[in-house]
Each structure stands twice: as structure tokens, then as C-alpha cells.
Length: 131
Image (cartoon, rainbow, N blue to C red; front, side, top):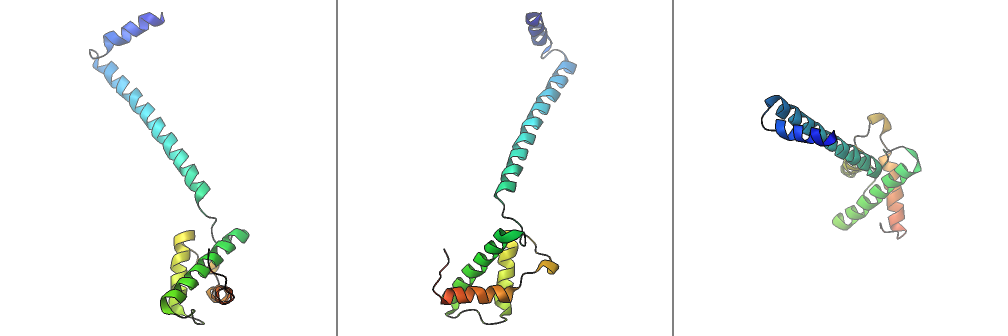
């Protein structure tokens, strides 16, 4: 019986427009299923590799401190001085870097840039360079 169906498909292919349309729909469905599986795998991979949002536990705080430390080191290398207290330009640079890494940070969840800057400067003065 299976062999007879195979011959029937071959006989209908290319001669029956309804059969050809049905076959095209079936092929499109298989392609869409493949694409869906690809996007699901890609989404799972992105979810796994993205950093935790700022404010979620110690890991997010450590990543924020590392960002501030690295940028303070770069600031020192470029300007020859550590960032000054209440340096608005430096804080804007920190905000842009944190937004790039963590995504948009709400105003209510805004980090204390001055505290992070003082902490990074004291670490740099103690001789701790960023990794």
C-alpha cells in the first residue's frame, strides 16, 4: 500500500494544481518550523549570555563597579587626572556606558555615580588597575 501511494504522489505531482499548491504549503510549513526553532535557540542563547540588569544582586553591582573603575582609569590616562568630585561630564559618560551594558536604567534606580566614582578613584590610587 505504501508503494502505491508513492506512485500516486509522483503521478499527481506537476499535473494537479491543487496537489502542487498543497505540496507548496506543506514545504512552507516545514521551513517555518525550522525558522521558528532557529529563533527559539537564538533567543535562548541571548538570554543566557546577557548580563543581569543593574540592581539585581551582587553580580550587577560588581559589574557596575568594574565599568566605573575601567572608565575612571581611561579618564586618568586621557586627561592626566582622576575624575573630580561631582564631574557631570564623567557621570554622563558612566550613564552612557551603563546603559550600553545593562539597558535603560530608570531614574528611580539611578546608581549613586559619586559613590562609585570615589570608590573607583580610591582603588586606582591604591594601585589597583582594571583587568
